Image 1: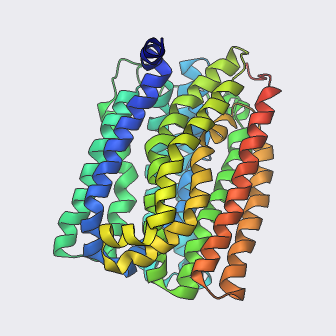
Image 2: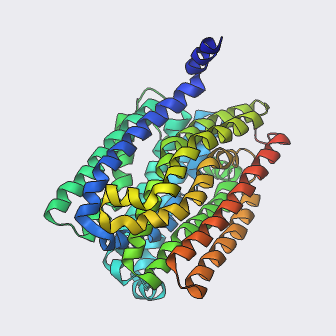
Image 3: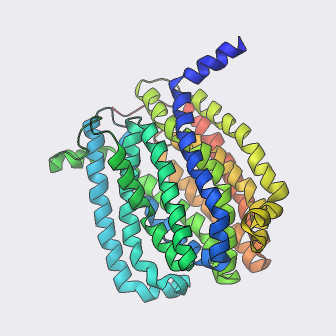
Length: 430
């Protein structure tokens, strides 16, 4: 009986898709982890700190490269509307690239002075490149998710990881400087988008870009206006929340501290990238389908969240107990302090890991305006906690601990709130 249940479960399309996505992501993460001990020994904490500051800056603007219109590509019932959203996404991203370029050219010195980012001043002009490549990657990935081409996504996640990490090691053997890591990171999404587009079947949906009347695009943009109006500001605020610790650590404790924090967060994000993202990418269109049919999807959210709880306890618990020793053993003795950071960050990252199903449901639940308010309040609490650690205790470990506790509380609230909201949901989109 139990064997038959497991066999039937393994044949379910949803489970197969999650496993397929997780396998590709797992392969990519394994590649990254295999290369990481070589990369950390080549470049060192200070070099990673400079990269961390650059990624903190681009991390604020890259997620909203197309004002989150790409996320809406999964939702329409017709492929033509979905392709119209692709057109809108690319057009919006080009406008943002032009505006960003003008701002950097005019206010270059002022930006560097305000944020104390002298170390990355020569690389600010790569930001428009990152914005455009991020938008293209989001568009291609969301189209592949819509058309359920999970095998393509999984395959190229693995190949992309090999190319990216091999480049870091190969070039680093000759010249292990921050410039190498920054340029490779800036071009990463462009390469990934190109690989996904080149590897996707042309027969599934035809050309992604079709001809549309301006009035048609206006109506389509207005229909999904909640994405740029509410989701984009929410993502922007969340990105600021993720970047502020890096900028504060850089200002008060130096680039090496940023290097420790960056490596700790990278390691702790592995379960999220390996399982959490794979599950949410598959869950999102499934939730959208159920909503379009007027069916309840609360059970999907609950089961997805509980599954991530069970899967996350062990890896995050290991980091809490053995963090400093593990980081010193894997990355080298100079990275032991990164393990101490990771030990205290693990609580926050665990709840970030298990909230992926809830975040996936937010666009379907039409909760984006409320989610924006939630993000504003949560970032204020998180920043306050961080500032208390930096200014009052003048201790980086305490700052990370307080930030982690604050983030955990806000994520717990989010999960409960979304699941409760799903119970009363009725689809309003046609």
